[in-house]
Image (cartoon, rainbow, N blue to C red; front, side, top):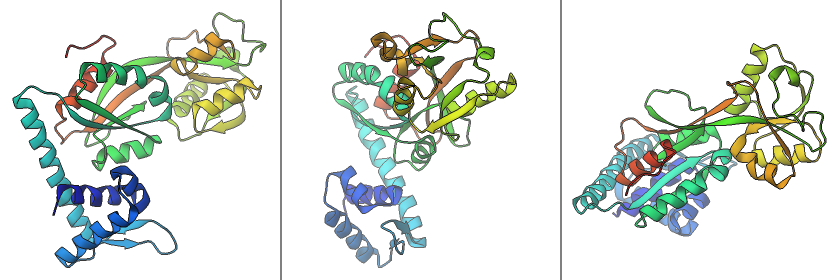
Length: 299
């Protein structure tokens, strides 16, 4: 039995999909099926069962036990590799990262390029997902790091804060607030808004500010990603409050008006999460150091 077989099994359990597990491991679906079949024959136990009427799979009771112990084996193997790299002072390997789109697309590319330049033997494997999925993937060990907006304290997770973002008002060109140097929260009363969906942490933070200051806005539309919100504002649906890094280029290009908010509380916290019971690889530690500091780090 090979380490790769254990990894495929754990990926299949995490993703609940043969096709996604095959894609993650660069093999065919039939190869994944064969690996699982071999495991079940070897241990004389059924480890997985298909969900009736769906393409998903679930762990059996024996599969839960096997998954837990396989994770331990994979973790020990990763630590073995890390220890051997440490003997020669080499920082390498792959750091698996899950992040939300707004952070991953607009804030991480420059950091990833800097990391890869400093540590060419290391690799960042980035996945994009919703906040709840990022947290789940970190907790179950399918990724080493998660990067989120407004990370919430949770048992079993450690949070390292990154530099905060300013939240800014975004309006169509020609809007009554577009030419302002700054906008106060009271100026937004009655405005038509293009929102994030209600379960997005940034939306929750904005709603709290409006509630605290008795501001009522008109909900025009809700979307789950920044790019759609920006486009909706651009064509005149309404205004939005978004993190400044995500709209910087649009403001410079003149496709949107980007107006600072006057109050100091318009900030979005961003943080890195990882399992408290898991020792980060050397590469992951260096990447976290890079993310938490606005300054460069030494190799």
